[in-house]
Image 1 (cartoon, rainbow, N blue to C red):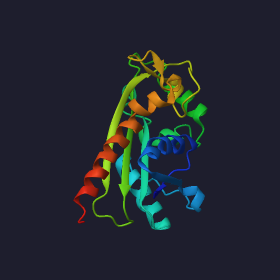
Image 2 (image 1 turned 30 degrees about the vertical axis):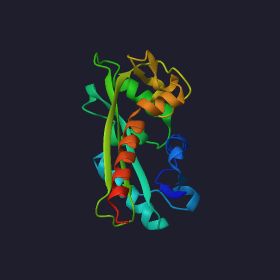
Image 3 (image 1 turned 180 degrees about the horizontal axis):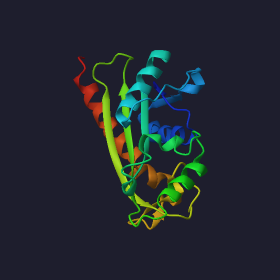
Image 4 (image 1 turned 45 degrees about the horizontal axis):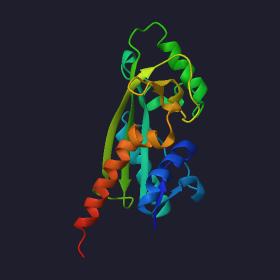
Length: 201
């Protein structure tokens, strides 16, 4: 079983990645279990932050590493909160405060469109010159009243018109199939397989 360090201590993300990668015989180890502190996220793009986190986790563990940087972008707010989604209200990890701030900022807006972004980076080593980088979007709308308890982050307020449900109301298996994180991981797996096929026998 191939060990991969996940450059995140977010319990929701850990569960999703473990579920998505388990069928491929990958053992996902959260960086916290190895005593690896979180990396700095000083960049203004999801991809740059994800790459920094992946290289940091790989260097500290001497293992391949997987990192994502994700967030929600409200169309009426010029893409905010964006890379600041987890700390939008000033305290990292306070989902309720982040959601309430987003709802306040959108209170006078008619455009409630938004999309989740997930940038996912895999490095085979700290200095991997060819990291696998994938970025996708998942479109929906922001609603005022929270609905559902299956998700985390902004999921209870992220409404999907085609499903007539919020992300937090989706069955976890369905969410893993259609979410921004599920989309990026499937593409990453495709590229990992292609890389493996190119290795000399």
